[in-house]
Image 1: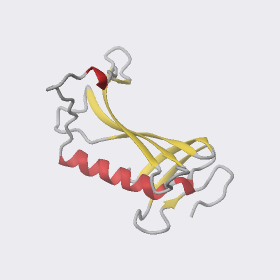
Image 2 (image 1 turned 135 degrees about the vertical axis):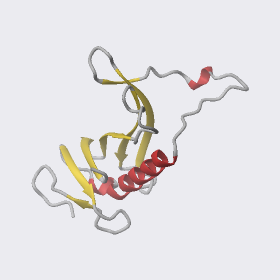
Image 3 (image 1 turned 60 degrees about the vertical axis):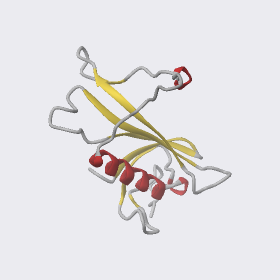
Image 4 (image 1 turned 90 degrees about the vertical axis):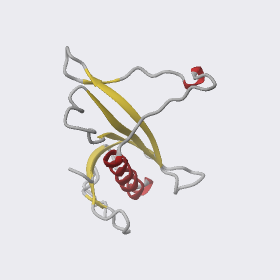
Length: 141
């Protein structure tokens, strides 16, 4: 469901977000490849407004295991002059990415849960951004 995220604390100052799948570009897409947003929420001690770290990954579905696997990364240092690396996002994927990042900034470091929690962003522009409970049963709103 859009606006729902599974967040797992990695420390009191950081949490990883379960991969957010960007919508496929056409009806054939998404069967063997997909793009995902892999994000982390951090308590940036130098600037609390900069609290999201993000990577966009291209994944392939393994024909043997039917599991999604990250495509092997390569070093951008190997890109030569005149070459470029491009990861195209269509309008729908770009909008989905924008909404997810906007929501994750609304979660912010103030709402890093204990353990793993499923959170729903109700109003990313409001001060009350989440519905749900922390691991110790305390309400996050």
